[in-house]
Image (cartoon, rainbow, N blue to C red; front, side):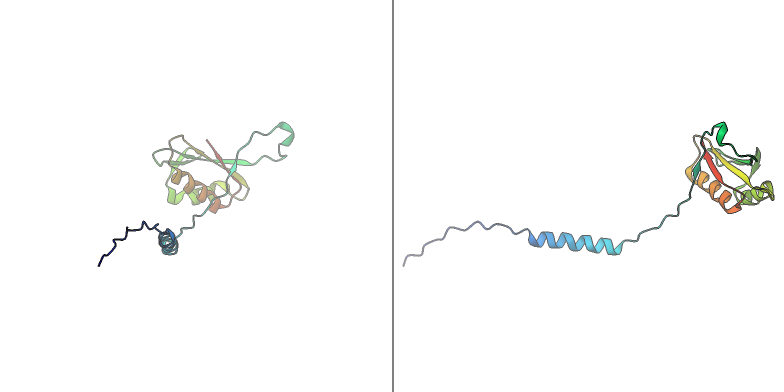
Amino acid sequence: MRISARAPRHRAMSMTPLIDVVFLLLLFFMLASTFARFGSVDVTLARETGASSRQAAPMRNVLISVREDGFYAVDGAPVELAALGGRLKDKGGDDEARVIVRASSGAVAQDIVSAVDAARRAAIGPVLLVH
């Protein structure tokens, strides 16, 4: 009896199970991850204004300086971050004042955002960010 040996057939590998596994992993990681919501601060940048667009009653300016070492100053007087809001309310008084936040070139972004946030919470007027 003669048994013929069959030549093994070359089967093509199906990509469908691999694609299914990849999509399941993608779905798992998307559902298992947490998404953080970051708060944003609206900032009005200072602009040059011509003589025709000046206001009749000029606003007082309150200057906050932020240095690269985390030093804060309000109109040149040093202040801690915790006391910044109170100092701004004292400087603002009853009149509306423009708060100008001036950051040095090496200042940490979080320090600048903290100063802008304190100025917004003091609610004494518009906040401008200058460099």
